[in-house]
Length: 55
Image (tube, rainbow, N blue to C red):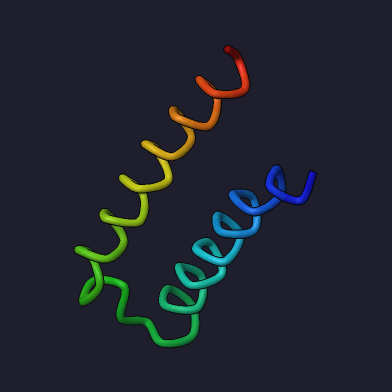
């Protein structure tokens, strides 16, 4: 049952990282590659996750 919460925890950690870089460090423009890579990974993971849960 814990496996259901692992993707949610990863998304929350990524959002905390983005907010940290955006509000505290103010260098999100230097980390665009990491930001887009993280968003791409979350999008693909979400599609796979929902397809597994649906089928």
